[in-house]
Structures are given as C-alpha cells and as structure tokens.
Length: 66
Image (cartoon, rainbow, N blue to C red):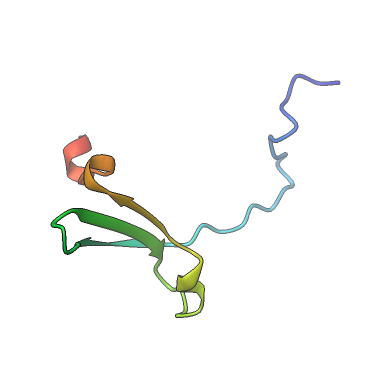
C-alpha cells in the first residue's frame, strides 16, 4: 500500500472537463437576494437539475474576496 489517497487520480486518468459556470442574482418578493449558479451551456431540461442557489449573506461578490 502506498501513501496516496484512494481518490488521488494518477497521471493517466482523464478528468472530465469542467463546465463554464454563470450566475444570476435576483431579489425575491421579500427583498432577500438569491444567487443561482449553473452551467453556461445548460439546456432548459438540464437547468431543472444542474444548479445550486444561496440566499441572503450566504454569498459575496467575487471582487470583495480580494
């Protein structure tokens, strides 16, 4: 047994290409903002399942992190 993690890919492993992501921030009827992140090229059908959302102060502007 080696010391490498069982989850560490070796050099011959072809990792899937990561999709380009986009986001949309909207304000709900209660005034709370919601940020949804999803694949840029998602079809309408894929948008039903390939997304993640955060509300309120669960997200920040990227520029605020620098």
